[in-house]
Image (cartoon, rainbow, N blue to C red; front, side, top):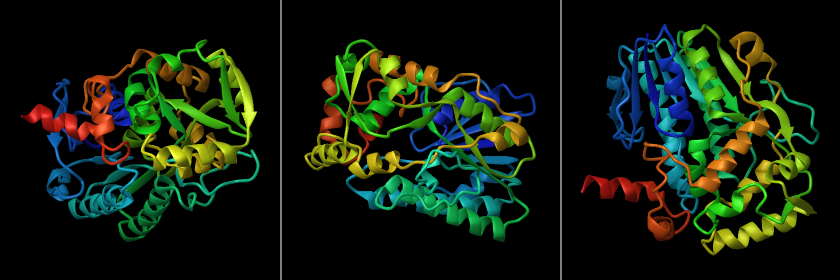
Length: 360
């Protein structure tokens, strides 16, 4: 089986490649990324290509499955640029899959595609996918769900799988996730458990998490099986104030979410924080996921619980952990994180500066 992984170098992409390499039915893996990594993995052929302008149909021809993971979070201050990759780029992937006659497509959707819910009753995969208005990430994920609906109608011979995972963590994703969401002003040492004396905690915040390796296995099962449709992917338990207090070994003080959003809005406008205040607002309204279908129809169960996944990435934050691909590189921000400041903190991805420098 020949599988092409689009966006193979990030947090989820590396986990998917690793899981596919362990699958006996997969004989060939093509890892595609706009910033080709220097590392060499046996059994993986790396291709440098950008979903915005590459000849994707030629790359996809002869593949048994395409896994589409390519997605950008930056620049948050220029949402038309993220739309160009995340929405327009995905539309190009869908056209190329159809033109190349690829039998299966596995797409990385998200819990962020779902419409909010006012209670904690977990939602199944038929819950509406309208996202959260105002948050670019959620709006883009929801829009792509409509593109997938059209693709499913127009290309019925292609088996389409939509993966909708919760927050996805691993130790080596720490530098990337700190850079994308917390920005350059957050000291690594503050994230270590037992360091923070007190943590303001927004009322009602709860979320689900899953380890990247478990997400990778879910994708591999979707690629090599015959399942169709959407799958929620999350681990137990739900993370709430009690969980965060215990994991960080700190004291949490409840604060109004509006106050947190207002503070984040000021920090974002002053270019002190890369994540938008609307992303926090959307996170406060995410529904919980029912993962029954993934367990029954995919045969998937998580091996690492949500608290372990969060503890692992927090340890990675404290250590400044990373890996050997451009998105996961621990030094992507540069010495004293100067590339993150030079990027305008949400103006563009500092990894692009790193890769341009490496080519010289």
